[in-house]
Length: 204
Image (cartoon, rainbow, N blue to C red; front, side):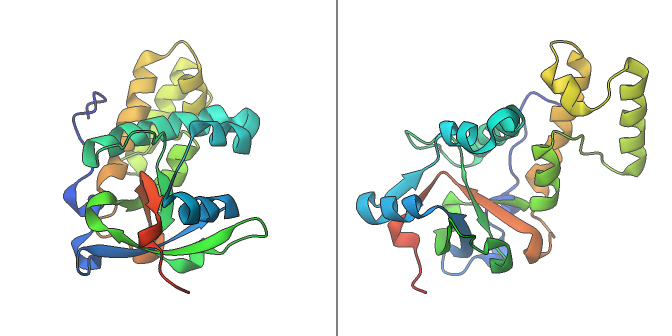
């Protein structure tokens, strides 16, 4: 599998046809109140990468590595608007969008052409900078190669200035996310949009 970025999200992963109703997909998001304020005031809201630095602190580098890869792939499927630095995350299953003390739940109707969908299980592994094997045998073989080179984890390789082949292998494996929405149970479906728009909000 090439790590050169030739692949992008499959059509089924952009907006799964079985979930599109009148050109839209029903989704949910969890956001801080300032996002809802921005929607009411400005009509839209976008994510800044500085928010990731503030939220995750010392671990932000790993999240930024994953988000940067995802953003490049996302931009091949949906045009990035000016000012958008990272996608906004959405859930298909409202049970994942339970708001905490400092957040609000947004119920949204998203235009299908602006939405990318994927399985949140491999995405969670990408956030941890793991290798996404084709199967257990593939994962075992990759782990053996890491051990042979004296590398403790894929994350160590990605953070290092060495191990270029290992890095390419890890990032190439993430391409499996690009087709993961097809056949994924709805409870595990996550999505991304470049921005939130006030007209997408559904009344509660």
